[in-house]
Image 1 (cartoon, rainbow, N blue to C red):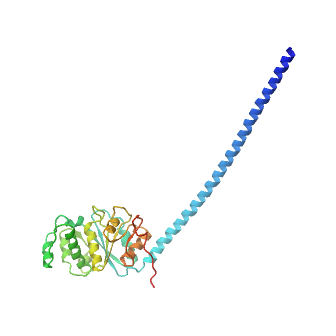
Image 2: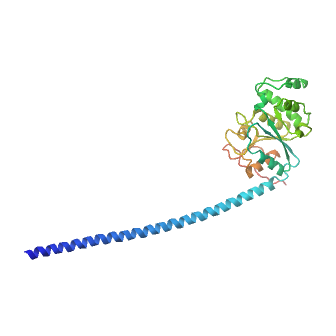
Length: 289
């Protein structure tokens, strides 16, 4: 009896040992498989990362080539587009981003710039009028309007008559003496201009007098465009576009510089830039025959 119990106990012990061995063997095998799978996954991820990194480097190099090409091409495209043209750039007392870019593209296109600075929003014509303005308008049989948009338009039209048509410089001098506008000597003298770039900001995006002067320039037969370095829904370009003027919202880019030259030369009209309501990023580049 004792031998039978001992024999059974031995058999049980053997089977338990086998079970434990099988279990441990399975765990070791599974662990080895997991390790192999993990290693394979890491290797696959590393390969994928290297491929993505190589692709990014290729795209970065391509973008740099495209950027360099755009810069070089824009200079060739605008070359001579504004040959001999003189353009007034209207700025305000605050910061006007993009003025240097505007001056650069006009120079590259063969033109020259006259920067005029407005000392106060709307020249103060929305609340009062400079001393002597009533006499100036009366001498020309013009009944002066009350301070506001109509008076701004009257003064803008008269100023364009001096700058665009060369009809004296009395109003220009009056505004300079009143400390409302600052102009270079050439513009205060006999130099005439055929285009206006509005860059002066105002409470509604653009200075209302600057917009009125741009509209008056277009009405007289010249060209006008609202411009800024970076587009904004409440910026100068958007405000000018809403008032019927052409506008360029990205003059700091090659496409913006080409757009500016095209508009100032009369080859295009519209609102160009990244804004959602823009007519395009740049105007159609038609080849002149």
